[in-house]
Length: 431
Image 1 (tube, rainbow, N blue to C red):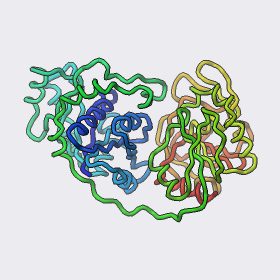
Image 2 (image 1 turned 120 degrees about the horizontal axis):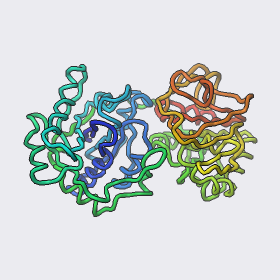
Image 3 (image 1 turned 30 degrees about the vertical axis):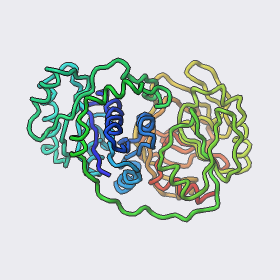
Image 4 (image 1 turned 180 degrees about the vertical axis):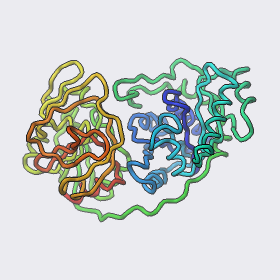
């Protein structure tokens, strides 16, 4: 499975739109595109999956390690992979450049060409040459001009590109290519898909065969650590309030246990299970349904009986005593964890995190470190006698350098972790 990394000159240049236009173009040309996303994002992959009808692979060396990043790439099932990067190419310690180096894939640069022509070529050349100056093994091979018109505009960009930088087409400035956003980023792919006709029109201006010719295969990773299949059953919340989960996480859970899904928003009864995973998402948008549906009440009862429950971010919020949404309405939640959660008007944490287990926990052994990512607009007011599972070695955590609220056999964290961290293997082994 050959691939390329699609990088931006900065955040906001339209990488997601360029990615899904490429997927559409690849499909039209007879290829089976495999989407992937660099970094810890859950939202952009939902747009990829909506176009490709297959999960977008999450590739983040911080979360999964370099071998884990390669394993996640090779879990894909298409024949051409496009990895959408994050922020600008070189931005951040866990940057798109680092992901391209880990995968040994060529980089295609998305440049906003709305108000530029020859300057687009200059920008692209600077990004390519900077790699050598910085001692980075980054192979910038081509350019996609975002918001570029045809005719002289496109020709001026193409003709100005130096040898070694291929012109791979343009995304025209069409109405209807905008994706609405909210506090955690873009709307999910199932909520605000771009109209198929608009996407097809955008894809018609891309040089698909030239891009495929530039793609190459990453190296093969070390084999994934094995784990015996157990007789346990894990219930995974899956709806519009609990939609932030990495494909590899559900796959790893299914390799180690039986997996059933349920919808707290719909008020589904809790399946017969040995453990529950509540991923992140948007419980703050569904407070009334969660409060009245009955599922959280049942979770509270089962938690008190000792059922192991793991909640991440939105899952933590749903396991708290109350949740106050952005309109100031307070909703009763499961009441398992001693905290009241409230939405704020700006984000409260955004970082990769590293946690060290104080004692044996649901997802880690005593003294073990696990890596994750946090991004949330809520804050938790925690009881003074609350028990925490982790000390924060990097990141913010829940309160005062501590993470992982624990009660009974329930663990709630703001941190999202990846299957290659080993956390979900630990979880299954505890059931």
